[in-house]
Image 1 (tube, rainbow, N blue to C red):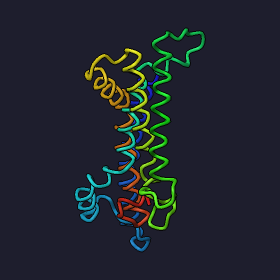
Image 2 (image 1 turned 180 degrees about the vertical axis):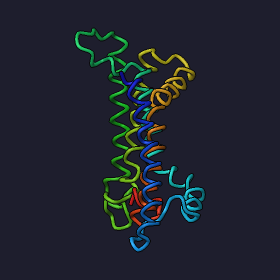
Image 3 (image 1 turned 45 degrees about the horizontal axis):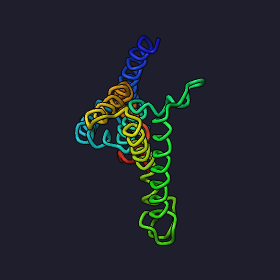
Length: 209
């Protein structure tokens, strides 16, 4: 079902982008005093070509990459199967669970030392947790922790018998999330076209401020 719906959803986003550009052009011609800027104008084309890579390279893109890699290691290590109802846990898996939990505790302890104690390096200049480098790195920290715990579990349980196994799980996560990257490209372009034409804002970081 998803494979049938997703192509049409992507097409709908592309059509919405074209309609937005067309409407901005019509409004800018018919109502020049409205302040709406045409995405089809020389200014609009220069803005799009000059800043396209910059507004695509947003934190959300990095988060998608890291989240997909974390998903891949969770799936490849088999740690998610522990929650399956009625499934018996083998002896080696029990050892892997204990090792993974210890790894998680150590990781959380390190993060706490870097962010929660007074004058920690991940706090802001005023000592605040939000906003701060910790807040900006919250998603990467969660992803790195998930990858670390999953890899440790996979190695101890025997799901990962070599570096190649870990590598394949990371790549698998990215391939499974490939559809999200297409929708990200379409949505981010639609958003910034709206900002340029109607919101009078060409700051490509406006989404993350």
